[in-house]
Image: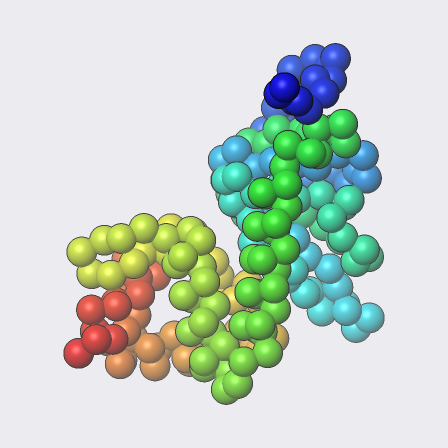
Length: 190
């Protein structure tokens, strides 16, 4: 006997498109599955400093129901296409929710590395795995992340990030291509 999950009598899953810099609306009763594009989840410290909680792309789910952090925002870093998943359909997202937990823990472990240069390099590796693609020179991070955004993730200053990126370039392990970064893995093995 085959038992299948109940099929809710709902209309088809609703799609929503957001522009770069849009905020995805805060709703406790739905999850947002990202079909295309990149978002980041953020909060703020008591002093008003931005704290990045994660970067999420195609196949990931985000939403206020996945956190207890307040305040909490989901900011579009690119144009984003989403599917709205009502709570009756959350059982379909178990794999995406497990991935969400794993990615958040990876990022948390990176944020606590020392020295800061290792923290930045590990964050770049993480970005290259999540949002990268192989090119002749190495692995292209196919996402425009500013020095300030990197600094917010790894808890340092924008000036420090700029200085460390220049150092990585001088060492030949980082290349720039049209406002994107390439991790030159072939240089690491020499």
